[in-house]
Length: 135
Image 1 (cartoon, rainbow, N blue to C red):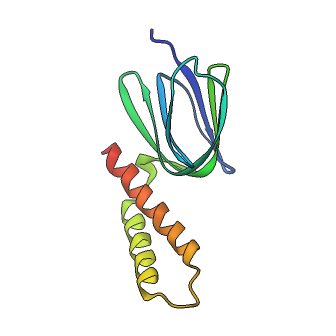
Image 2: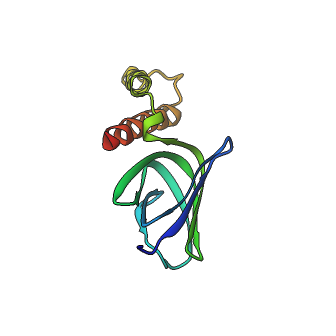
C-alpha cells in the first residue's frame, strides 16, 4: 500500500472528511499548493477554490471558501468557512448566483458593496468549476 497522509476537513457545521489519502492539492490564499506524505510542517491561509485529493487512484473534488490548513506529523487539517463535496453542489443555484453577481457589477450602482458582490461571484464560479471538474 502506498504511503498516505491523513486529511481532515472541518467547517463550523460539520466534519466533512476524515480519510487517508495519497496527495492533496489546495487553493492557498496566494496560489495553489500540494501536500504529499511526510511533508514539512506548515500553516497556510486558504482562498476560494477547489481542493482535490487522490485516494485509491481516483481524484476527488471539494469546494472551499476561506479558512486555514495545517500540515504536521503526516496529517493535514483544514478548517474551512465553507466546504462542499463536488456532488453536493447545486449547479443551477451556482449559475443563478453568478448571474446575479455579474448583473450587480455591470449596473455599478453606488449602493452595491463591490467587494461583497465580487466575492459572491468568485464563490459561484469556484463552485461551478469544482462541480465540472468532478464530472
